[in-house]
Length: 91
Ligand code: HEM
Image (cartoon, rainbow, N blue to C red; front, side, top):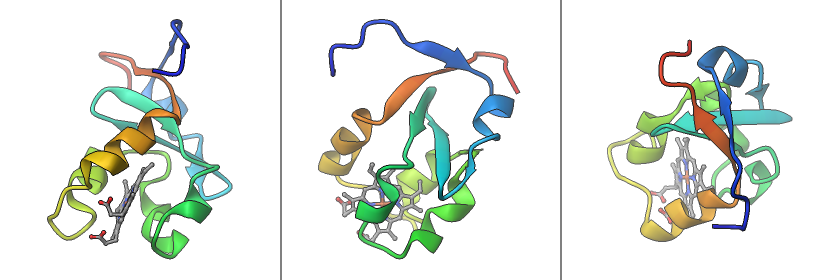
């Protein structure tokens, strides 16, 4: 937790507006993240993350694109980029 107690709720349509490396949001397991500032720190070329920007990216985070989950440390790093929750029935 970063002290933010009030989170906003977003639909997948809203997440989809942030679908590029310069403005990259992802929905992962019910949470919404703005990873724009993280892209350059990720240990791969940005092209690996690009297709997941603006999407429900649980599969990307859980598989890294080849079937192996990210480390617990990586999941904890993601927390600081959380901006809200995914609307239950929003698309
Ligand atoms: C959702 C799309 C993503 C994909 C497809 C992806 C893919 C990858 C790949 C291919 C690697 C290098 C190979 C490997 O470590 O096995 C990697 C490593 C890593 N990624 Fe990602 N990544 C994604 C998102 C993220 C996010 C959002 C974070 C953190 C905010 C993150 C943090 C890391 C870290 C810390 C590593 C080093 C290895 C580890 O700790 O698991 N990644 N990722």
